[in-house]
Amino acid sequence: MAVCTSVDANGFVIATQETPCISFLLLTPSEFSAVQAAAAPFDYAQAFAFWSFAFGTTLLFWLTARGVGTILNLIRRR
Image (cartoon, rainbow, N blue to C red; front, side, top):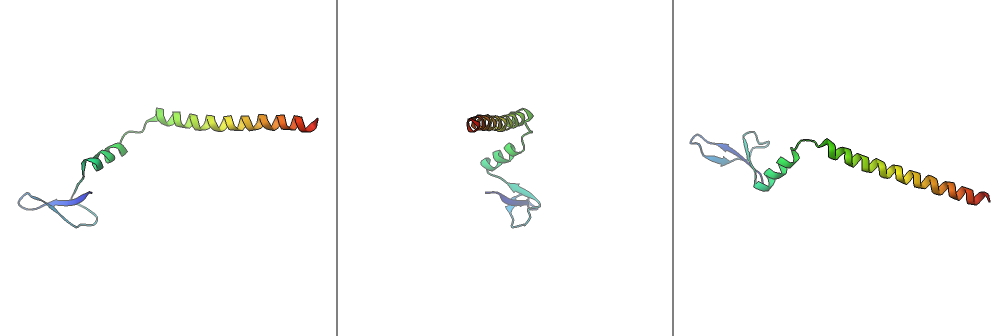
């Protein structure tokens, strides 16, 4: 759990109840790693791979539906 802290005149770190925290914020190691992961640079290659997969899947479903519709129309006309 993050704790808002400040440094007193003697150089000691003390917890404060400031809202919002305007001095220092102490984080646990797991919170720090989560912040670091969120601040990672944007990966354009991964974003392109995800977009390509999503668009390709949508296109595949559309082509499949169109093919099934064409076959059903051929069957109905006979």
